[in-house]
Length: 258
Image (cartoon, rainbow, N blue to C red; front, side):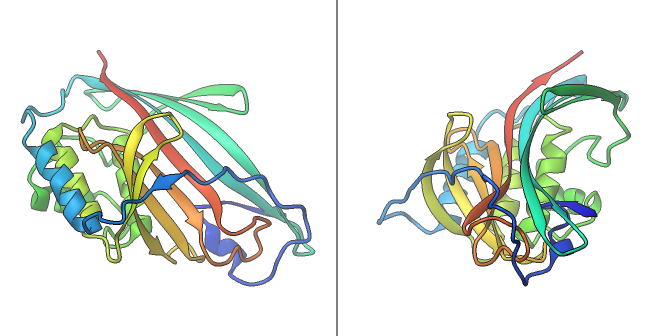
């Protein structure tokens, strides 16, 4: 049997065929409240970015961080007969990273908690606040294209799982999202942690299936609250109904740690 975590190895199942298994119970889509007179997505993000960058210019503390986030991924197994069975797997993470690069990652999956030492992260060090320098810095530490929604979502996640971003860095990350091709504004939304945000989406087939990547942003502080991945046209061999939320990450807290 073969297995893959959707959002990471979607292409392992191709784009054709269908499963004979029962449909997996994927999360309900979030409810967006679009405004008929809303400005274009790039203009709205530009407004948020400017408000964010005008905040206090202090850099994140280098002493260490404690970061908490949750993820939900569609885990799919395909047997030798071609049938696929999908299960939604929730995971809870708490990372404690020290200034010297050491630390731990606590991962809870289906009630089972394991703690592992942190490996050295490419996302360590001082994060630039200048948008151009930030993009170059992030690109140099990512094996993905920041011009593709899938790559931008992955790079942003890798960064937010290791760093507390100050106002300048948050604005620079919004610039990366703003420059995604085909970016649209979905509307206001309450995320899966009950927080109010605004949703911006772009579509990519980089994973093997057309997928909409939705970035949920706090319009007041410019923080990226979460990223959702939704299959929009076909599920390939995955036994889910379209549209299907197949992965989402919710970034909950990031605080200094000794």
